Length: 421
Image (cartoon, rainbow, N blue to C red; front, side, top):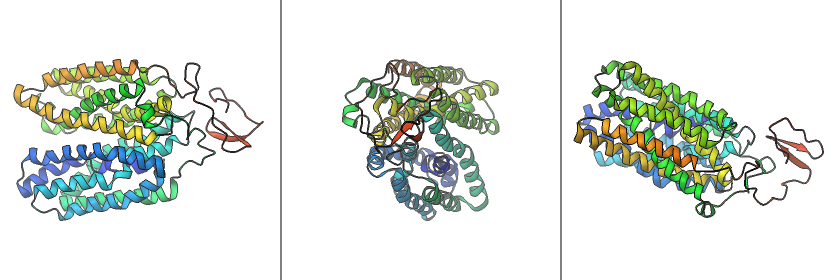
């Protein structure tokens, strides 16, 4: 729950999902072109490509809690500093380099690495609960931002978001704890980043997340414009993303529950079929009911993406380099998203319609499903088909691990899905 609250106050919410609310006020005050303002979103994505592997390295070396505590004040100050933004596009772009950089430790890898260390049997559900913070923030933060802008102006809105961001510090200080060595038995088991890069699943995952980045980012950025092109009134088009946000929250929890019962390949294949239906509905020029259905299906897919990523890393590569592997995959996701949002804009201008781009995204969803189906059996889940890593010395001589709880040797109990130490 601490991870849930922390992610709701982090840059994935306060920097990314609120960006669009500032476009119109900045355009009115400074006269900057909307494409010029929108370029800052791509700058944020490019910065994330660089920041994410560094964050993963820091999290693996120092633990999630320390990295979160160090980053939280700087991220809050970087948002508040936008209050002083001058009439200068270079200064605006510099701000969107500094915001993701100052929030380096608050991107999901820190919280998910920390959460994953405490759970084994209920790993999927635990990660789903943690990730739901982004979904909740995705619904609430734009509403808060709109109210702040409408009441006190865009400069005060940045101050308000900075106040929300600083809440991550007391949450982490009082309620987050890095797993203790005897609790996190499997912490030292797994592949290094270099060893993971020599396996087929590693490259399949990277390819899949490039494609997921193209689909998710395109829908999030272009959804309202696409609906307006289809003739849906602006007041209704602006409300359709709420369906996406609600579905995203549902997907965070449901996906975690499913991952504890079904393989990553099967779960993601089902979501990607929904993604194909979604982009084909968008390609056909949706009416209001089909737009709501398409938004909900897209929300389910987008909501599942990082639950799946944070779950498959311990299952295919172990936990030793969780942060590094997560950071590399997150970077590839951002590369796909940054490239796709720009290319889809060009396609829309050239063809006068989003239809060709949506058809390409349908193919991307199908290819992504094939990549997940090629992953093969888990390597670190202890199942009959899994590869079992070399046994590690027990962290303490008198403790064994059953499920998520340490117990005295000789008193182990088994409750169905728990595995003996």
